[in-house]
Image 1 (tube, rainbow, N blue to C red):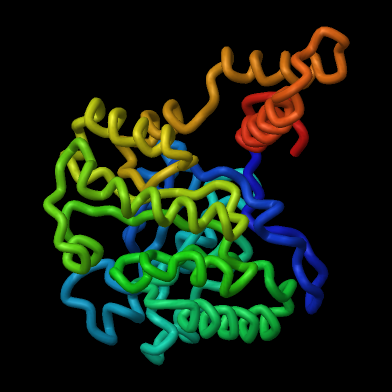
Image 2: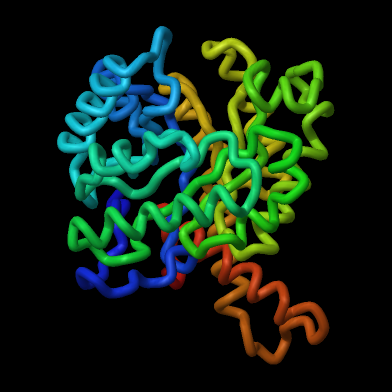
Length: 313
C-alpha cells in the first residue's frame, strides 16, 4: 500500500495540517543505526521505522555519534519515498547541543519526522519545532512539514501530556510509552506484568490527552515480554486496540501480529458501510442513528488510510 513519507507543500510555505493528513501506524520498528536491522524491518513490512541517534549503542561518544549519523542518513537514502515505510529518527534533546547537527545529517526526502526523547514538557516540543523550522528553511522544504513524535518517558511528561501534544501542530502521534525496564519504568517504579494492569492508567491517561489534542491515531509503547512470545504480544496489543490505540512499537517479529490486531476486519468494514448506506432511510433508528453513522464514517476513513476499505480519506 502507498504510504506518503512527506506531506506536500511548496518550499517556504506552510505544509498542510499534519494531523488531518496523518496515516495510521500499526507497527513502529526500532532499527537503531544498524543497516542489518533496517533490512530486517523493511523485509517484515513495517509501517514505520524508528532510527536512533540518541542512544543506538554503547559506548556512544563523539566518534560513534558521527558514525551513527552517517549510517542513518544512508538508510534514509535507501528508503523509497511514497512506497515504503515512514522514516522517523530519534534525535538528541534540544538542550543537548547535538540536535541541529542531527537534523542536518538526516534531513532526507524520506524523513517523515523526528522522535523527541525523554520529553519533559511543552518547552521541549517548542524548542524542537524551532530547530525543525530552521533546517526546513535551509533545505528549501515546506516549513512545518516534518512531524514530531514525543516519547513520554518521565512522570512529569505523563502528567502534562495534553500540554505536550498541543505545544505544536507538528505533534501527529503520541501515546503511553511502556517498557519492561528503561526510562519510564524508572520514572514510575511499576513492576511489569504481561497482563498490563500496572500500566493501564498510564496508557489510558495519555490516550485521552492525545485524542483531546486532536491526534487521530495514537500509538503506544512496547511489549515487554519475549520477542518470540507472539501470543503474549497478541493479548497485549489487543488490550491497546480495545482502549483506542491504532498501533505500537514492535520488533520485526511482531509486525504481522500488530497489523492483524490494528486493522479492521472485513466484517467490521461491512457493518460500517451498511450504517453509512442506511443513512437517511425511513426505517433507520431515530435517536442514536447520527452518532452511529459518524462513528462508522470515521472508522471507514481509518480503513481507507490503511488501504483496506472504502471510506473518505
